[in-house]
Amino acid sequence: MEVLPKALEVDEKSPESKDLLPSQTASSLCISSRSESVWTTGPRSNWEIYRKPIVIMSVGGAILLFGVVITCLAYTLKLGEKSLNVLKMIGPAFLSLGLMMMVCGLVWVPIIKKKQKQRQKSVFFQNLKSFFLNR
Image (cartoon, rainbow, N blue to C red; front, side, top):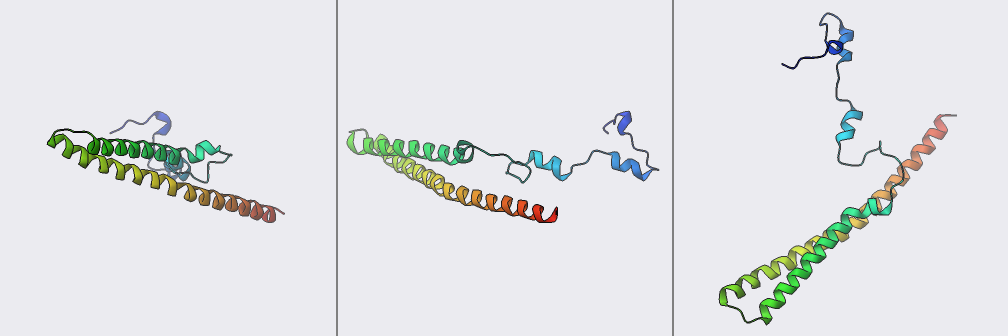
């Protein structure tokens, strides 16, 4: 059993002492959250917003080009039967994987733009609401 420091020892007779125990509240859980939350405010640069889709599209493009090169080599080089079969299988696999990653990145960009517009509207309505309620 874990030993608590003297300041955190709980007297079971007093109900107030239970409030002194460290607990996980919404604010402490928010820190470990991976998603963006309402708690994070402040402007973000375009690079911070679009970094992940750009990286996904770049990696997808590189894999796509690698697949194109392997496929071209498979049909232009005179290799052994085994090597030729391997290249003919791997080339299209890299082509499809690269294309899939590029499409995922391209689709991600409009989703982020829509999310940013919704966030701006939400902030606007929150400010409007607080303006009228604070009068």
